[in-house]
Amino acid sequence: MDVLAAPADRHKGWYLSLMAPNTKGPSFAWLDPSRLYCNSQAFADCVKDLLSPFHSDSIDLVAGIDAMGFILGASVAATLEKGFLAIRKAGHLCVATQNQNYTDYTGREKTMEVRLDVLKPGMRLLLVDQWIETGGTMKAVIQLVERLGATVVGVAAVAIENTEGGKWIKENYKFSHCIPEELQSQIDRKYLDSFKSF
Image (cartoon, rainbow, N blue to C red; front, side, top):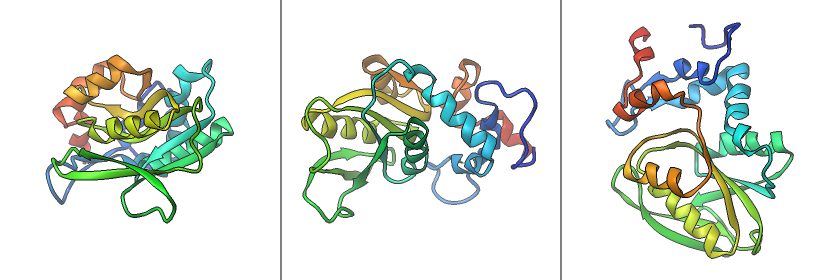
């Protein structure tokens, strides 16, 4: 499929076939979801699909997770006409922060941080990231947000894998992702049948 084309029948997740398989680098980065953002219709439909479960929810702020969650999160925030909060990897914010250590999907110890001058008790946040594999990063962000008294309205990502951490998020928080049920097993296997066309 032409990366900039859009089919007439745009069912949920049609744009997932635009994602490219990893052709270099370590095995944990198994695909490149950012390719679908190059297609304006795919990007718009992805954001629409992510927001569909949250239309009746009161959301004060959208938070995106460093770094690819910034792209989706900012687009979600603009669509909702809400502000956007960047939740960063440690060392990137030059203001007072709260931080949380965690283990990411590569097994490395890392730290996430959030600025202290925005979140207030009772604020309602939608958390957005590009992909949730082990759930370690998202769990750390949830802990940060809740420690500051804010409420997590929900979690949105292009995909949430059915790992232990992914299942924990699905069981404990309202969530959305762009994966039709019939493709979940491919996501969990870390190989999409659409990769055969590359």
